Image (cartoon, rainbow, N blue to C red; front, side, top):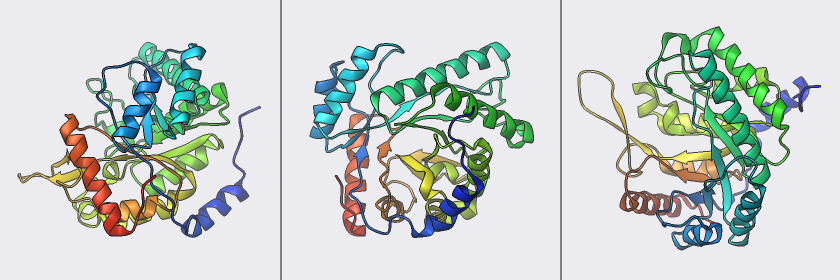
Amino acid sequence: MSQGKISRRLFGGMLAAAPLLGQSRHPVRLGGPVFLKSDDPAELAREHVRLGYRAATCPSVQPGDSTRMRAIAKAFAAENVVIAEVGAWVNMLDPDPAARARNLTYVTERCAIAEEVGARCCVDIAGSYNRDYWYGAHPKNYSKEFFDATVANCRTVLDAVKPKRTRFTIEMMPWSLPDGADRYLELIRAVDRKGFGVHMDVCNAVNSPERFYNNGGLIDELFAKLGPWIISCHAKDLAWIPENNVHFQEVVPGRGSMDYQAYLRNLSRLDAPLLLEHLKTAAEYDEGRNYIFRMGAEAGVTFA
């Protein structure tokens, strides 16, 4: 028997209720990498608190190491730091069949780790048919073959792990499915598992000038349509680099044009952590963290 299917009535009810969900405000749990040279879960958890973080990525742990997983869960819970995600950053659609099989096994192992440590989610992207870059663009990334293979991969992971505490999530990408709210809703309906969720990165939904210039409206749409399934989120910013074609570049929050007040207002209506990512130095993370705190204050949003 397959794991936790979503009935048509339940799916429709959740979708209809999405704009009404979470009208009350919740403190946002912000997190990000720490640069402490330690492998001790308790020290790492305390360092998150020192930096003002109440969310974290899962520290390094190997499959089957239940002792360390319990130590991680205990240490972070003691400091009231939520483990937001276990990353599984490999290509589930690798063109090489052997590599694809290995990667799917790895993702399944990572989802099992997320379940054992009590992380909010295990996250990966759907993948790519690009042979040179595991996350790269490819014409088939918008094909029915890509969609159907992604549905099968998600079901394989979820039916193997049968998560009860965590969710398996796919992050949107600008050049592959799902690349927006409606495409993600199609994926949720097709995967048809209660253990499936949404990992929200609003920057990854910006793949055109229209979306860039109207990113506040885009953010509102993403949360209105996907709110019931959003489990965890990423924080960065986008700038448009002047040249003869469209070129968006990830930058430190505050150096780009993303509407962080809209992002934080929407996020405060959910219980979903927000993790800074893709910055280069501790100083850049400090800058991004302080900017997000400032935007939250201006938007009337509090932080845990």
